[in-house]
Length: 498
Image 1 (spheres, rainbow, N blue to C red):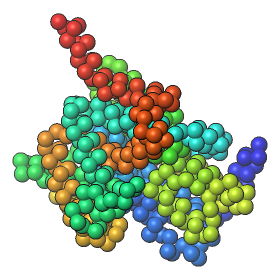
Image 2 (image 1 turned 90 degrees about the vertical axis):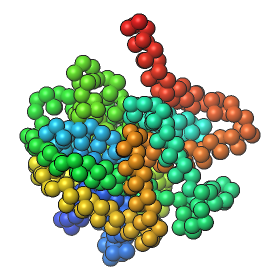
Image 3 (image 1 turned 30 degrees about the vertical axis):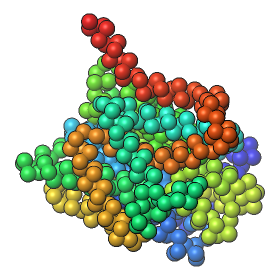
Image 4 (image 1 turned 120 degrees about the vertical axis):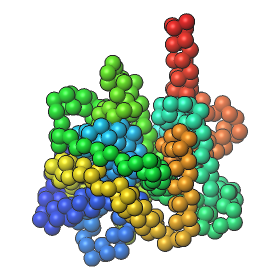
């Protein structure tokens, strides 16, 4: 009851005219930067930090929250229309969403993404209000061996499920893990794979890798195909969901929400793991004609991951607000923003600044509604991007990608890395290697290494410490099952046919 009363007071703060304006500015900016490859919500919040000194803290964080949620919405747009995710968490949406667009169902893909984001964001924000203490207790109970097992599960799932060949999936994963090793070893302080370049001591930013492999790799691949004739203009379908689309979408929305929120609350969980798991679940549950559509444009493959993506955004705020623990790049920037105002997230923040905290939480409900109103009617307009001549469209993507990457550190080394990775992304597409495992290896590889070292240090070098925890044992068993499931299916099929 206390939480409900505090939430109502938060609505009173968020519904003031000035804060509604800041919320609208935030969701609009968030959607725009989510659409642009290489410019994400974390970068936008960071760029806005210097100009918010004169803005009251509550208004500033309401705007930042709008940027955060809006970026999740906007990231699905380029994933569906152009196969170039604006955020790494939107990679899965590109798998089926872009296939739907090429089949003339771009508007339906955008609609299910927008509605799923609204449903998941609203439910997950409600869970943030009601169940935050329970989720935090669950996250605290995880040990290093549990986090390592969780990373292994993500590695095997993405390598076996998102690739027609497990070997190619693991090869792509290896590329990402190697890129993730570049920089200073967090425990020994030794430089690794930097080749004497000082700018590589901090590693390669995931934004550069995602933009290089996805955006530039796609541009080069399409350019190589344009020599063989002009690409066919994708037809635009109806702007809203039909009865069949609704019936096929609502269950993935709920399942994606159930996966996204707890993973977002886990340190190191992020939005990538639940989106991949959501896609895996929907693919496993599909039957008949629906199962055959996966890989060709199944709406479930858009609805579930997008719901998981937005639910994880609310989950990320649980450890940030209650423990001061950021679990994503945007959460880390938000933590810096709190410190800029002399505030430290944690239990005392709820006691000393309830108007700010609960006003920010209430603004998530308001921002979700604003985003649905902004995005759903604009689905046909976004779909019209597909009618822009491909040379102009992709040259624009290269421009915005380069500007976004250069804005990170204003470094020419980042630009060289961007174009090297673009060539690598083209080569991976040319030879049938999936891109997603490489990015997941980069994101989760360093975390897995740190947690493995911590677990082995606690166990005094005893490898069995990795399976002493029941949670770790279960996760590793599921990872082995995911890795060998394709082989088991092939052997079973041979026995049946033989």
